[in-house]
Length: 238
Length: 121
Image 1 (cartoon, chains in turn purple, green):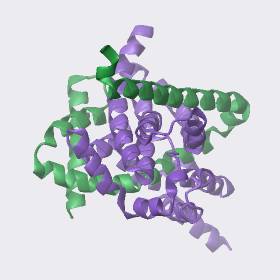
Image 2: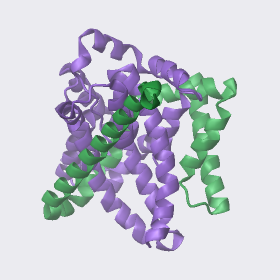
Image 3: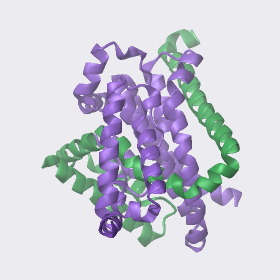
Image 4: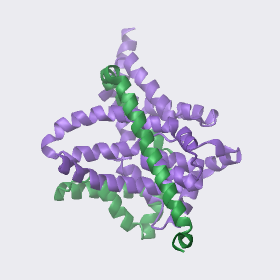
């Protein structure tokens, strides 16, 4: 028995644990998501967070221990969500038609299969995540180096809140747009990309070409504008 | 392999952006500066094609990248317990406002754009 405890202590402190847990849980959650025809409530980010969070609490594993492994996933995002914007903007060259072509190529087989299944009912319903990171980073930056530590503490708190924030968009965008009578895929995608950033773009790509292309444009613009304007606003207000 | 080269390029641009921000004390996030630089560099196929391959790979699995941060919520469960309702209301309402305003505004602008002649004549 002590051997088992020691084994667990070793495994849970090795970076491998966080990385493996993240990937395994996410892969399972994504499979379920596909199985239920990508219903908004089955959002894989939401369920991965719930399952992983419950695992950490149940095993009394501190978050930093988990993050030691999970950071290898996290780093791909880029420290400021700019990474997501980078990824979204990298595919399209400069003009919108080119962006659309890129978006089409990027969206892949799954989306096409899905559309054949009559996926029109699937509104864009992304998890809203990337841009919040951008705002987080901007907030840190705007504070200047002197306040960095306090900012980082506050940023961590905001990070938790923002997680909920983005999931709200993920779970409700479809119903909101339907309720407002917004049928245009371009408009839905653009609003999604503005409010939902990276995941918005990714999700919109799976739903519709136009939605995906416009979400990509919105994502890039939003990240740029927010990062340029928030520091200015901060100085003006402070 | 081409996606890997693209990933290297993306990270390289991001690193250059971070470097510039640090060196010049710019008030912007490094990745955003890197994004701007990359935007100009995309005119060269040697940059564009690998970057596109990497971007497609990243976009296809984008939601995975947000899981580690999301799990960070476990460090703030006390905050959620204390202000849960207020947080939910603020978050839900502000999110809806953001999406609704963007969607309605763009729809209005697109409609106006769709018939430019009819507008003035």
